[in-house]
Length: 212
Picture (cartoon, rainbow, N blue to C red):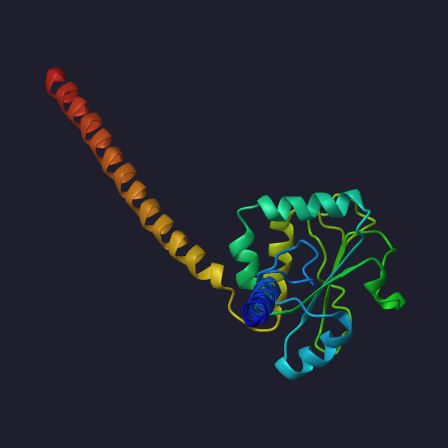
C-alpha cells in the first residue's frame, strides 16, 4: 500500500514537472509567432508599456485567415527569427487572435483587414506614420506579408524613439569595409591611368624624335 502511495506521489511530482516544462517552452500568447518572444495580453499591454517606457507592437490576426497562416509559416521558416527576437526587446509585444482583437476604431485606421500590424506609443495611441513602405496593397498600409518588411518597420520605430538599432552597427562596419574597398579600387584606377598616360607620352616622344 505504501508503495502504491509512493508511486502516486512520484507520478504527481512528475506531472507537475512536465506542466512546468510545458509552461516554460509553450507560450499560449504566441499563437505560433514565436514562443521565445515575451508576448503579453492586450489588456495588460498599455500598463506594461507605461511601466517600461516602450512602444507597443500590435499584430492582429485570425485563426481562419489564410494570409495570417502564411505569414506565421514564413516567420517560422525565416532566417529573420533571431533579428525579430532581438528587436522585440524594444517593444511590448502583443499579437491578438480572433476575439482578442481591440474593438476601438483607432486600431482599424484603414479597415478591418488582416493580418495588420500597428505600432502604438506607450499610451496605446496609434503611431500612424509607421506603415509598410512596401505594401502590396496601397489601400491597406498596415498589411504585412514579409518578415523583412516587419523588421524594417520595427527598426524605424526604434530609431524614432532615439534608440540605436543593433543591426545598424554591423551595417556600419560593412559600409566601412566597403569604403576601404572603394578607395583601393580608385587607387588602382589612378595607377592604370598614370601608366596609360606614360605610354602615350612615350609614343609621342618617339614620334617627335623620328620627325627630327
